[in-house]
Length: 171
Image 1: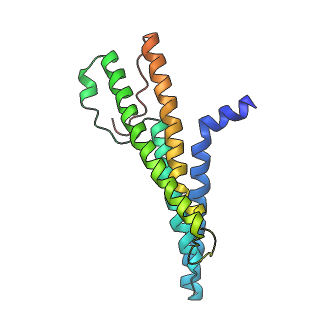
Image 2: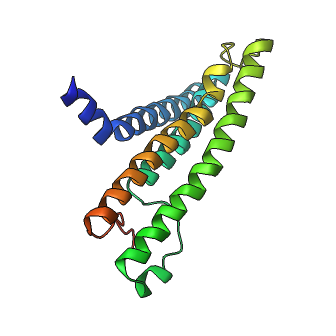
Image 3: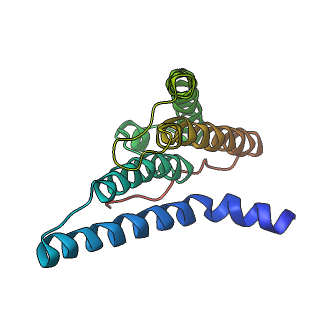
């Protein structure tokens, strides 16, 4: 069980991103073929693509937090020592955690209202809760990854190691 949880912790977002990306691309391909070859398109294809993209965005945000690959201004980080850098990263994580808690709460409120009134999607005619859950699900993952980052940074700070700075997109 520990090995499974470790694998999910290491690659969970990657697998989810792969599933939603493949679903998005395949559905879009089928819809383009249907539209161009058969002169027919469906409403459900557009909805699947739209909601897959929304899930991709929120799960991708959690993956970026995990790898410290999210957008940040790090010019200052080049001029400070490792201890100050660690405190700045911890401070940034605390601010992002507070914003994520507020966003999680209000996005969950939207899901609960949709569930209460039984709203459905226009094309698929299924509960809109499944698609509105993308936002609190994404922020839940972001909160989990921020907690892990916070713990990792505090351990690094305590042990005198440089904090994890993530992968750089451009060098």
